[in-house]
Image (cartoon, rainbow, N blue to C red; front, side, top):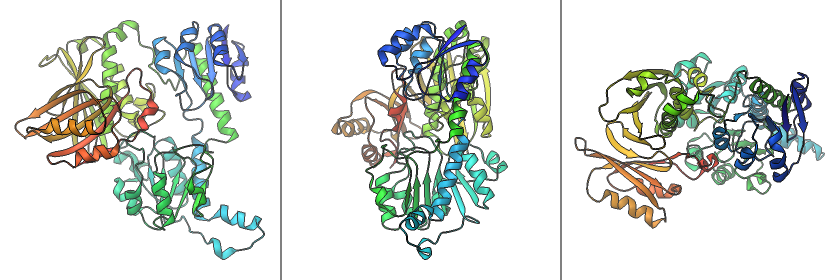
Length: 546
């Protein structure tokens, strides 16, 4: 009989999924210390947790019989997923369990903000009857702008459409035709900020979105605009938001998340036009039950050898295929992530070309799936190897594969093209052995870069002194260069410079580089390595242009 350890509080409905089947022995042991978990874990085939239990590499190494780790919730930052993968342990989570709760919470915030419900209620509790002080605004006919059209974003738009609101959206990872089918008009960021009466954020926190809504964005919004964030703290520059609300540049804000939580000391709480709550988006009894039932069902399926819906790490691939294609799985995922961080425009298609004799004999489906996961990971919190193809298809993005046996420059390589409404971008990569993967071409410029850690992508004129200029600026700000490669095109007098650095480059340094003559474009990319933590992604990085 399979033994299951539940080390964090889980609803009884979730436990019943396992106990009522009669196939599992379930032990609920809460508040275990790290040492106690280490001592006990070897006896169990499955581990169910929430956010409190830390499943570190030493715990995983001690778990000699463990086959699956189930996380009741979305985030898996308390699990060493790399160690689990190395040990053949499946990690599953529950990204859909709180979708309705989060969507309804956003609507509650929207209505409360529009009708001044909280301050009016407080006023009445204070024994005052001031109807004229709390005149609200209607939703009907207003423009609702959503940033992100993932699961929660779509549920929110369905509900605001029922109020008669006109929905516009910014999401480069969904095609215009797919958006039109659900009654949404896609626009660019500039248009969304200028045209919206309400703006709601439904996107992932990463280097692209960190402080992506700040002073310059508020300046482009209507003074009557109201902002809602029930997604992630850190997307909004809270200092700039305070100034915009204080000066009347923005009418109001409803915030359920903050950059630093608990946010009991933020000056935003002093403003009357701010509705603030302590991160309650998923806090419903139904959501807690849903995630418990969902994770228990997935653990049950995994232990029985049945398919699971939300595998965070690599699905099972036979050892032979993994041995042969392993480097290209990693390479494809990294190229996908690289594309996601530099792409401009609305993505409509992905084309992957497999070059070389290796790919003629092998099923390349796992590599294509890895590419799709890599492309979506920087913008979606709940993407994995199982659902990535579905999410790509749902967004109306086509995926095509081609093969050739030509060995023009490398024995085997993959070239991945992302097609948008602004053109095409190509990144090619290859593997030298099982552990040495390289990006060898960006568009028509040939390079040689290790795709790991923080990388600066710079387009500049091909002339003397440019490398020295970049190096000097980085050195003046105590940023160490780990590696550098330059690709040149004499036809266009253009060069692309890629610089691996040991630490993230702050925004003002990127702007300094971009402001130099003969530098056209600067972009910072982060590609996690085996030991990198995903949460470092939210450092102060951004795009800059000269």
